[in-house]
Amino acid sequence: NAGVTQTPKFQVLKTGQSMTLQCAQDMNHEYMSWYRQDPGMGLRLIHYSVGAGITDQGEVPNGYNVSRSTTEDFPLRLLSAAPSQTSVYFCASSYGAGTPYEQYFGPGTRLTVT
Amino acid sequence: DAKTTQPNSMESNEEEPVHLPCNHSTISGTDYIHWYRQLPSQGPEYVIHGLTSNVNNRMASLAIAEDRKSSTLILHRATLRDAAVYYCILSVWGAQKLVFGQGTRLTINP
Image 1 (cartoon, rainbow over the protein chains, first blue to last red):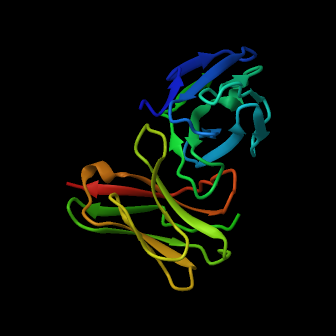
Image 2 (image 1 turned 120 degrees about the vertical axis):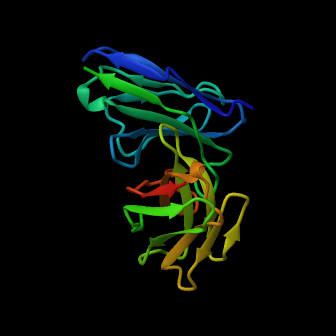
């Protein structure tokens, strides 16, 4: 199994540009989520999904959109990038929705918005 | 979410045991105790979790105080690869998110 994969690894955007961060998992996990991690800080939840066709907001959803058309993929869209969205983005998946299921994290996408 | 308190940093030597403490005095009866770690430039990695009883797995042991107000992650024989930030996280059953604090930065000396 490849586990959780994320592309791209690095990205530089100009303010106002849009882009999609890709996340895929091959473990048939129902639950997927997106976190962001700012320098020196813990991770904060952006959006999550408990299954195909079902998504919900986390604690910092503004400026981001998600959709879940398949079990495997959970892309994160930045609608109009802002410097405040400079961060490292992690995608995670787990067998079940929430605690106590172990979450598997991807390697991250490092995004810089200038 | 109930709060956890961890030391900012700890240091240990290779091949010695490491005890990473976590205080969670406001824990509720339905809160699970999770530990994740994050190696440099990588995503977090699950280490262990428990509810009331001590737990062991191939990576570590989790010792939970009888009153559940504190817990300790035990790495039995540290290696250089164990240098990471360790997060102690409380999460009620079914919670949709993990709340990551600042964690403990563990340094392992050769």
